[in-house]
Length: 247
Ligand code: APR
Image (tube, rainbow, N blue to C red; front, side, top):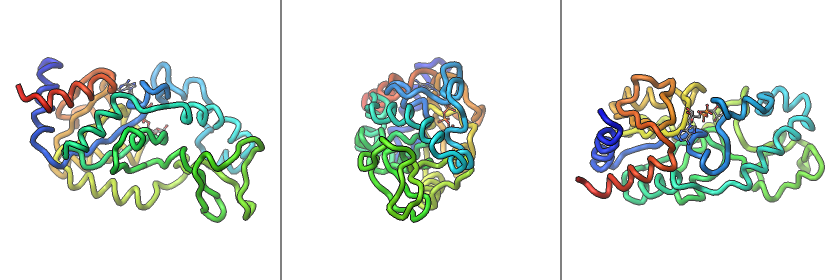
């Protein structure tokens, strides 16, 4: 099937559902200036992967925060792109009921998506590792590292580090959405990091059609019923237009 035919088929399926769920990864934010983690230009090619290891952060919070500062600047400077806007439009059209994102940049909410499950937390929030108190990112100064809570606990970004559990409510919401959806739009994820990578499998087992948008085939392989190759910031708006204009 040609790319055009695949996009049209995917649009026909989306037009006829009221229960689509999007699962997004770093690829959806690349057009907003936040590099993906894997692949030739990936963050893991130039950054120390310990940046998101909780054991490393506990052992050396100053070094941990020093590594995080560059990512913090990227996240604070990023704005939603046409891919985020298109997913928010599909929610307004009553087609997408939830966006489950692995991203920590908060861009889906900024683009107007209202039901967003932050599967890996958010860099726009900070959390005390001792008492659990949270703050908005802007409320915490990073002039002296590491930032500490009044209870003397270490403050870290409210994101899921390797070695930490998925937030309970995020897990419940995500698994519920996957079990109830008719269509899952999987956008910009290599689908290699569990447990997020299990979500499309759960949706498929629940009978959903899987429509994947990526620059290249992901680890989902043949689980995807439709694969549309291209930049999410270009493909998603094209998909919305195709949904709006049944040929
Ligand atoms: N449009 C669509 N897809 C893209 C684009 C783009 N412009 N650019 C890159 N991609 C695709 C890549 O081909 C790749 O399949 O996005 C995917 C990004 O994969 P990863 O970098 O592995 O990001 P992700 O899948 O979100 O990683 C999952 O791993 O490091 C952890 O916690 C981190 O949440 C992250 C998790």
